[in-house]
Figure 1 (tube, rainbow, N blue to C red):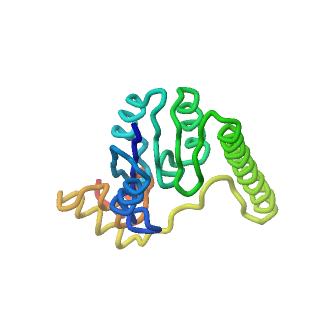
Figure 2 (cartoon, helix red, strand yellow):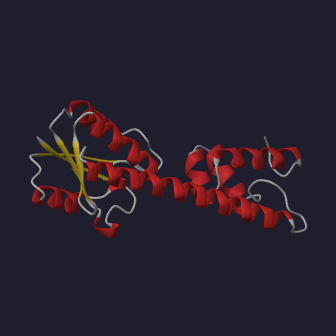
Figure 3 (cartoon, helix red, strand yellow):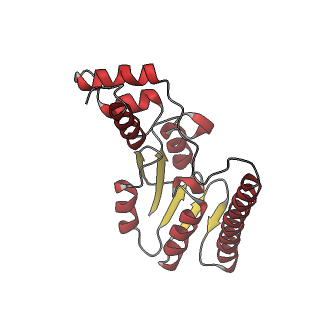
Length: 198
C-alpha cells in the first residue's frame, strides 16, 4: 500500500503551499492509494491520525509526505520516525527530497539528514552560548527573559472583566500578550500594593 499523510497547523495553514488541499493534490499525483490528514496547532504534539497510521504500516508499504516537517515538528524528530520506519521495511518518500529506503543510497540520505540535524542543533547551542556571553558583559544583565511590559490600565480593565465573568482569564492573557503565570503575579502584586481589590 502507498499511504499519504498530510498535516497542517490550524494557524497559517495556507502559507507556503502547505494547505491540506495542496498536500492532498500532491499526494494523489504521487500515486497514494489512501491519504490520512489532520490539523493541529503548532504547540500540540498529539497526532492521533498519524500515530494510528504508523501502527498500520507494515513491511513493503510506502509512506509519502510532501515535506519532512509534515512528519514531525523538528528535523531530528522526523529523522527518528524515518529511521524507525526503514527498520520495519517501510519505504518513506518525501516529495521535495526523494525516496528513503533500506538501500545504501536511502541509508546514506538518512545519515546525511541526521548529520544536518545534529549540525543545526550544535550551531543553535553555540550561538546561544555566544549570545549569553556577550549579554553578560552588559550592565544590568540577568538570567532569564526580561519582565513582560504590560499596560497597567488595560491590565486592570481585563481583571475587572474576568472578575465579572465577562471574560475568561486565558482570553484576557491572550489580549494582553502574557502568560497565565505572569497574569497571576501582576494581579497579586497589584492586590498587595492596594491598587486592586482581592
